[in-house]
Length: 446
Image (cartoon, rainbow, N blue to C red):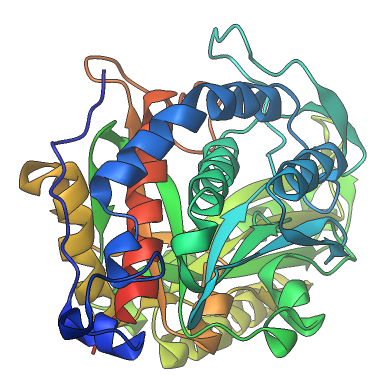
């Protein structure tokens, strides 16, 4: 059963006919006329033809997830699929990235669409017949690996879109660049990766699009629905590691120590005053300490404690303020306690800002596919996305895809019980295919 509303056939337009050099006064158009641009019904039919294959592909990707910069099996599967569609395929971009180029038979714009391929160090607990049982070594520890953020859906949807659009090659104006990106969740320590490295290696240098599109599953939205945000959508992502240095002693002789545990506890609490006392109350930001690690034995005060976490912001000046205040707080507390500190503060991807004109152009297209009752404007999230780096180069639009089977529940993103339903594949393929075809035919926002 389709979760989509009935589609509405689009009609040809005089401006496109004139661009192609035809006039009704000269007789009926040839096969290259604007009337051959795939309409919604053709996209729906093409989606149905590939859906079973793409569902199998999704299961295969989900069952064998790979961490960032190590997506070798996934990349090989993607490249083979694109080659079978007759595309020009480039591999080994930013370690394991794959790019497919679909050249339409008619002149038109160049646009890009991106999907991410990496999994996470999470041990799966979904009950799926195709659940991952794979393990690997991550940061020196044996861990399970899982597609706990929906990247298997993203990759499968984009392969479906590639199949649909390739079947229309003779009727398409312009070029579509299919980007399959590694390491969206971040590369291994000491390596570069993700969107940043793809761009550094010339992704947009040889073929520069005029717009880029992408999607992300949403664990709070049912299959059949889509969500969008105009303007600021995802936050900038920073990563900090702080070592609080003291002096070790017997736990029964605390006077002989410089206790890093006490200093660390004070730092964790004080960092929250940045959000509550140094920033405007309406300015979105998050400071989270996700790791507190120190000590070897219950009766020893350790020599140091590690704090590690993330900062999320939208405003570059706020980003500067947070980093400055973190150093001041760490310096002040450790000085008062007789210790010292070291901090490594790494700025990650910037905020994802959806192009306003492109977003407002895309919303009616999506509404036409899913129906007005199935599309929702969403507030900005403090989650992060390195799609931002593509959208900083050219206008970008990044939206959310409902993934929860109606009547069921899914664990949140990055959890062992995260469950993205296969039903989201059809919706994802139809919506993205329609966006891309409409952009190629119309040139996007005018």
